[in-house]
Amino acid sequence: MSAAWECVIGLEIHTRLQTQSKLFSGAANAFGAEPNSQACAVDLGLPGVLPVPNREAVAHAVRLATAIGADFARRSVFARKNYFYPDLPKGYQISQMALPVVGPGVVECALNDGTTVQVGVTRAHLEEDAGKSVHDLLDGFTAIDLNRAGTPLLEIVSEPDMRSAAQAVAYARHMHALVRWIGVCDGNMQEGSFRCDANVSIRPAGSETLGTRTEVKNLNSFRFLERAIEFEYTRQVELLEDGGTVTQETRLYDPEADETRAMRSKEEANDYRYFPDPDLPPVVVDERFVTAVVEAMPELQHVRRARFVNSLGVAPGDAAILTNDRATADWFEAAVAAGAPARLASTWLIGEVFGRLKRDELNLEHIPLTPERFAGLLLRIEDDTISGKIAKRVFEALWESGDTADEIIEREGLKQITDSGAIDSLVDEVIAANPSQVAEYRAGKTKLMGFLVGAAMKVSAGKANPAQLNAALKAKLDI
Amino acid sequence: MSLDKEEVRTIAHLARLSVEESRLEPIAAELSRVLEFVDRLNSVDTRDIEPMSNPVSSELVLREDVITETDEREQLQKPAPAVHEGYFTVPRVIE
Image (cartoon, rainbow over all chains, first blue to last red; front, side, top):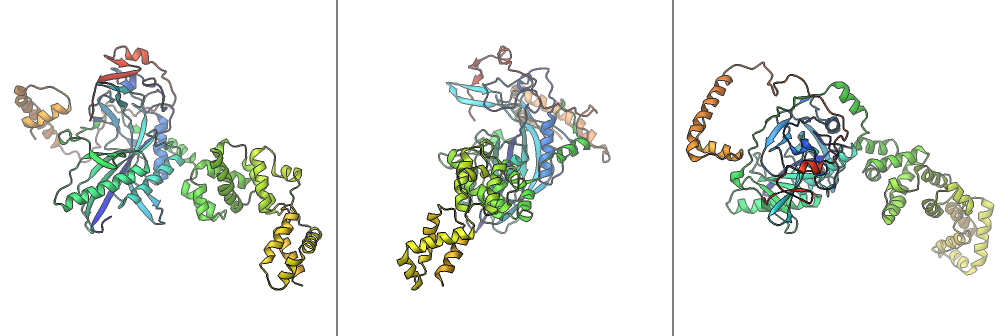
């Protein structure tokens, strides 16, 4: 980015809420069904129907507000946003304008380079999604699927607090992890459960006033978000440096061409004529409801991450990986609860278990290895029953079977040799078998120690305690 | 506050209402009279009165999150002018 021009970015994030039914009707809120098989009379906006809001959608708003330290509005109002499009059968979208359900909050987001950015959340509001238009199914016609019509969304609007594409991506990733963590949204970007609109403007570095912004709509991957912002920034800088002006408009990002293009013409300029929806009295939520929702919430991601580091002694980098999603953090904590030393458990989980998951294309919820059996293995490393090297063999068997680590160690005779008499005789055997190497070592070629340890380890079939073996060999050779 | 002919044209377009050219002036005058009335209402001091967003004083009842509607596509598509393989179809629209 150029030093002369500062980029200013605000994001609107649409999250599809995880509910059984829609925001205002009892039709199913599930992705991928047969067209129009989940669109009822309310979703179609047939005459005489009345919308009734979904309690769980309101609960999700409470969860989001709590997670970002924002106010949850005890009283919020639904409004009609009026526009005409075939996939919006009522001619208006039920949304919120003047009194949104979630008030201002703030989140701190980490960037890959180790810096952080504070991003203000202006508001979040509940609204219904529109249906889907398919333009390429039938020649000369647009096909309409209203399954998505009425599905519940929380639109999260940020302050223009980001100054680079990297910061915008960091914020989007942060919110993506957050909504998944608190169970508000499944985060599936391919299915459109989490999509971003980016408001981008530029201004001379040091200026306090905002430039004219453009809005890039429907970015459904972090990469597209980054590319679209970078393209917009460069486009606007070139425009202004050539003496032109930026037009306030809505643009679409085309991944194929890696560019943004104007979407709506100016005379269609958005004028949504919002007004309170007469079908829906204000949503007033009592304290009991809010308290019950908040109390049932999981420990928040950043709180849990800090606890892993501060109370369990997990390395900060490992703690970040383990708290990437709740299933992983739960699995890890179950292993620790079963007695696994936390640091060892984090290393083994991230190294061995994740490696296997990747290799076998599985995830933690669908493997026979339980946190308890995993802990059983780590306990045998901790108490020196087996060495780290042998532990990998046991792990292999643990992964494939339902046996415990102790059963595998017993059956395959893998118990580490820690008896000093047994180790001494191993050492004697190796010294007797390798007279020339022993002589060279004693003559000063100390590098041969590694060779002799290796030879002894081989004789023990890998079972000798490495530290004891080292010490015993050194004692005999250095006489 | 009053409206001119062009504003009426824009509002009619946004509402997808077809208004004859000769009707634009009379409608502008009628709507302006309504707005004058609103101006008179606005002159009342309402500082300590909470804005009303709904004439019904009752609060909203929330619905439990359960699926109550089954697939009624066949019946719901009967009155539709055109359908194709489960889709509603309309003359092609591209933004």
